[in-house]
Length: 455
Image (tube, rainbow, N blue to C red; front, side, top):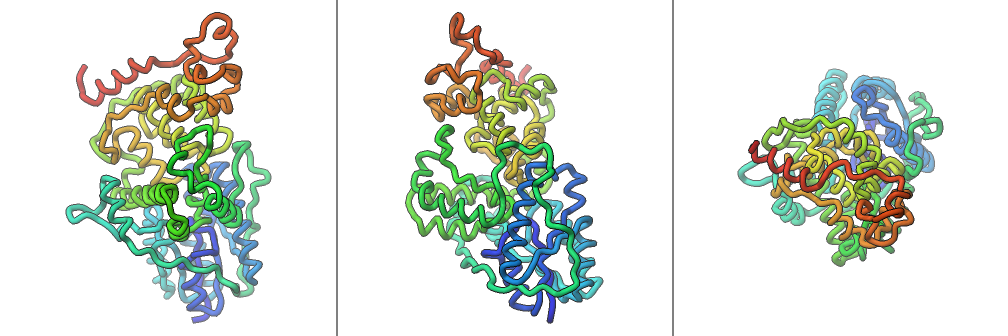
């Protein structure tokens, strides 16, 4: 064979890229292709923060290919139609793509297979590209997936991962294959002002720095809100500028409790992927028993979105999301618990807001983490409620995280910042900060009453 097409999706990198390696091994020339999927835009998932990060990733991928003698071909429209057009233009024999787990990705793969077969072109779908361990690799004897993380992690940990692949030295692209201009984040409106940069070069540099100076303390500090001691690699995992397989290998080589805790988080990502692969409806429907008496509370939801709930740690996390398009993981748990269990609002409302802003907005992780916190998902303690004051005192003991993101409270010293309603006299009157929009005890009682069905 002479020409193959590699369709890049959520794997925007050159290092450890099995579809690209297979294409280069089997063909004289390769067309690296990315299609700006019209269906994604029509479904409302092409939001500014992710479009900007994507533009960074595509620009960096194109630069890396050009350094190796190639280039990235970009098209827009229906993915299946555009892949078939490029395969015809290049007279390609094969198309290579990474497997993914969402219902949409699997339907796209099947449509692509049928369309290419009609043109006499073979489709090769490669595992362990988007995840470290694929959904079908581990499953319990009595079911098609694990519904509880701990036994899943035991099986996941015993899997032998493939060895990471080096980036190619040379990529030859056939002449005459037209491409749109590589998109750039310049000109995009509605971006979070503190949005991080994307691309494989940035991701690999961040991970190398994390291995040198962050991972050793991860076990002890990953919940430290003010310390910001997490890896911040989730956007790079979402867009595939980093390989989960490579990250697991390198973390395990680093060793220690911090590395073990980090690898466990990578396993959580695969856990959610195997749940969604088995239950694709969980992206929009309750994974466990249906729950249909959520409150409609538009004013309270608006306060939550804007970071004006009167609970400082909740508001700090929501404002971090607005500013960065990213939120500390402990903050995500707190704001999700507050919306679903204290305000008693449907988890889908929160999940959609996150998808509108998060640069790492991922269908498996986002939706199933929201369900986990709402008590409709895989949590074995579905009635757990996180008290924002107790949590704030534990994970932001001096209040530095709150003061960073809620400037109205910048002059409130120490842990008193977590309960500004307890301040007396002029100190409280001078604050331009709202009173709590809900009493925590009342919210807790309402949630538990709704779950037990008692009047």
